[in-house]
Length: 293
Image (cartoon, rainbow, N blue to C red; front, side):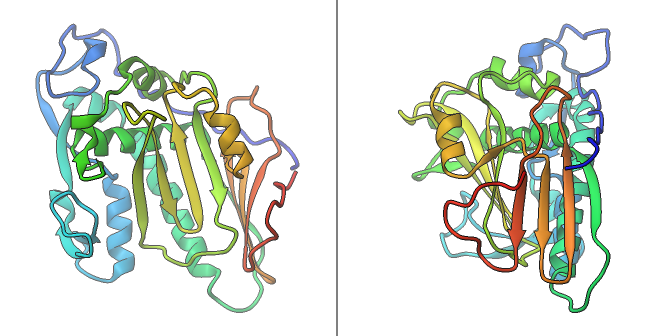
């Protein structure tokens, strides 16, 4: 893989001193470190919604959405970005977590640019861009919590916040401090083939085996399947995911055609094992193929 590249994650815990206040509508109120005011939070980051709007070619303040709890199953409708918000974080926590949205926005726009470039003809020099894997990992957790506490996540016709419990200590430690239990964290699987849909993002919750707890979420993103676990209640989850080709915290995502190669590097803690590459090619690789080392 060559020389290890490191991008330190930013601290996203609110700055001291603590406020000793718990806002009843903030899902991080267990920290007893909230502001008195609540904010309106985009459950999918505004930076990503704006990037989608640009690609769709419509109004820059609107995106097409489907699968909302208030929509019919086959309905697709343009919604203003400012409307895709919920009041689930206090101002203090929302502001502290904003670096996660910034890093995710850069990551998403890079994947967009790769998807567009891979559709062009002719050779070009390889590219490599580095991102903080830890920041992307925690951003995805933030999205999962947003769709859960915002009442967007629906399982079998019921909102997850009304039907499933959630381990607040697990998601708080992971989101604010990067402390993950067991084999939790980000897993990525390549779809096997380049998918040129730079304006599409799909998201769904993951429940425990008994369907009683929310334990993670899964995101479809331009030829990639990002899966995140934050609750290790089902102890076999990590091994099962690896067996299915989901690689835990891979170092590189490489997109290849015959004439072009783009690499996205993900930086993790120095002690994390390195060398796994998610390979997304123009043609589908054989079933059961191993990751490139």
